[in-house]
Image 1 (cartoon, rainbow, N blue to C red):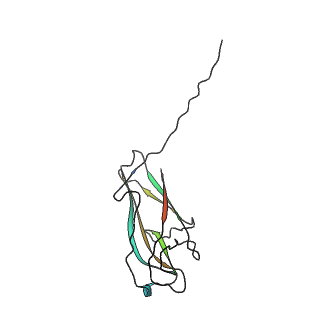
Image 2 (cartoon, helix red, strand yellow):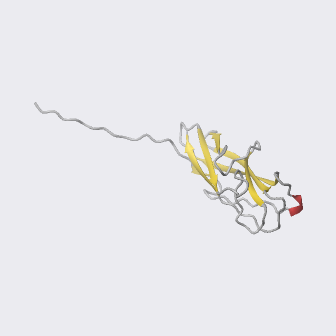
Image 3 (cartoon, one colour):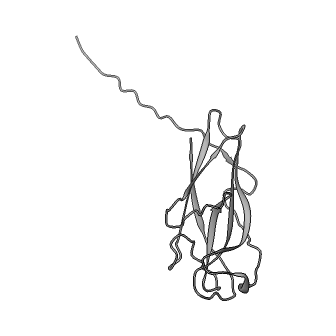
Length: 149
């Protein structure tokens, strides 16, 4: 009598969603403010925006967003400005005002699926990091990954 084995393999994957309006890359244009309006250690000029997912798979409960980026040299929670303005970084917050740190501190947010959609409300603004800030452009790149639950 001969014996043999059958090996069965498979893979289970979580559902996914599609990007809503705006696609996967978002540009958030902060409103211009006078440099005199900045206060060291405070956020100024907050602008709200949403990351939206649509057509989420049946059975999906939530999506967890994990944010990362290059930290400011002096303030590791804030995102480095690569523009021409000095003494300023970018602050990223969830809608409740909690900072989403560039250095990995408190950098995850989970949004619940409603029907077949997920919306994560966020806000970004200017953050004065030095004793003085100078006028110029402010640019920062923030990356995020999504885990479907």
